[in-house]
Image (cartoon, rainbow, N blue to C red):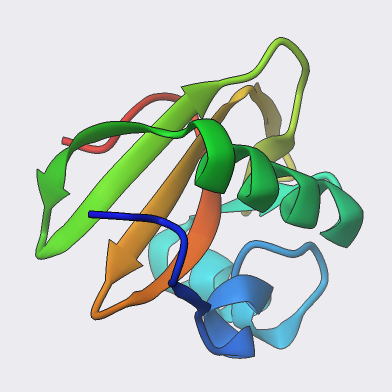
Length: 109
């Protein structure tokens, strides 16, 4: 699949990975943790890098996944206790011609 003609997902999918948004708080409450980017500028930079250089890692839960291991921290896994784990792996989730980026510890399986 070409990553050239994809559309960015709805803002609610993106906000899930931005600190302090209502969608991030909901994800944190629902699952006990959330994967968030350092900030929105980092999210957009990671999206571009994944669209240009992402490596297809497979199809997981109905979505194609493309990943890339960055040299620097791109985000954090945060939990209800306030712990933060630095994340250097970015994943682009593609489904039905739309995408959004997720900071992760490793590729989804």
